Length: 178
Image (tube, rainbow, N blue to C red):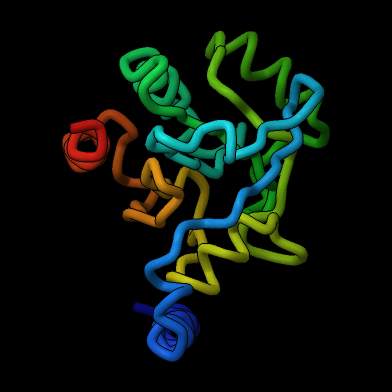
């Protein structure tokens, strides 16, 4: 683990240890702007697991969009898969419109997708700031996945190499649904 990442993890664990309510409490509600207009409020998804994935159109992991859609279809109505496009790793298209057109043309996505957001650098979206503050988690690359439980608690995170439909992720979602 690189030293800056280890330092970030230790800082997050120290914060959580100093304030157990942060570590164990439910997530606050977050609002994401939808790439289709309007917004998503995580409060509307309480009672369901939510898999939040930072995405990028020009990444080697971009084919995972197919897996994200398949996962969304498999858990339709019982869990939510949210795609969060980001250019923090310099692999996203230049505008929300370009991202939307690219995803429509290449992946026929129907899952919820946000506007382009900062997830690891700059003024990160409040969801990612919360994940860093409470869990020491910051995406290290595109297609990192964060699972939030039905009560809003941070359950687990996975890196780019873990495919959305992998048993590592589906076992966690299934456990939350039972």
